[in-house]
Image (cartoon, rainbow, N blue to C red):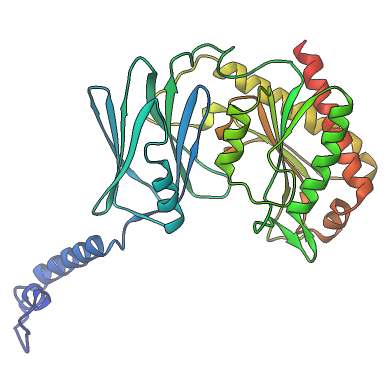
Length: 366
């Protein structure tokens, strides 16, 4: 079948659409759509957020994006380049990347935009940096995640890197803060609930002889990677506990759940160091189990739903170099549970249960 050329205009589109048979027209039209989409970035993957976690043993560059990402790698003499193809970068992510450029004295890190691709370029001294590798993961709240890890010399020694120890020093992280209120129900805000529970918990632990570090002391916003940087670089803590409150579109959802990160959740075509990972996985799992069990026992009279211990990748759990858990204390989106979370008595019970779980973890480590 042939379609004759009527009223064709002299343009790129008319040149493709106004000549040839129907099959050729459709083929050329689809090519044109694909070409225009590529030029306009319509089919690009959106990188929505980026983080940089600094540690004593390894640094982590983390990206969040909304669909499958095409990645390639070039390895040279003391240099690694990762190419993220067909991407757009949200303003928040771009600002984060700009702050990461050349932040370390141990290696040179650069982010370079080429049309619709992002190049992550890392030049390093092999006497300092022992390995660079990439993994993918599924985050709690986003579709896709990617982490590039940069390991330093000494990372293979558990005593110097993954701080699995039983000394009584701990970091308490109160989620959200400042303009980031977290979940809310009326005038009940997650940022205030977790701070109140956390301060009660800190008081209990200090009275029991713990050295306690807080990622925030008042109502202020602290970026997630700054929290992990503080825990890794400015403390000798052997534990990290992050407190949050849940939210669900279904207002009947309720209960307490506790998360830890297992390194099997990170997958990819670059294999990272397995040395000491088992110790960290086991310690985090034990901490999560002990804390979760004791929280539920402490609030037993309130008949709280047990949503179990779960594995997941969150930024703070991914970013710290010690056994770590994230506790979801209840659902603020559930009115009855929100009112409990706003109660001083219930907050005290939660804090007592967490403290008992931390002590049980330490007793098991001895």
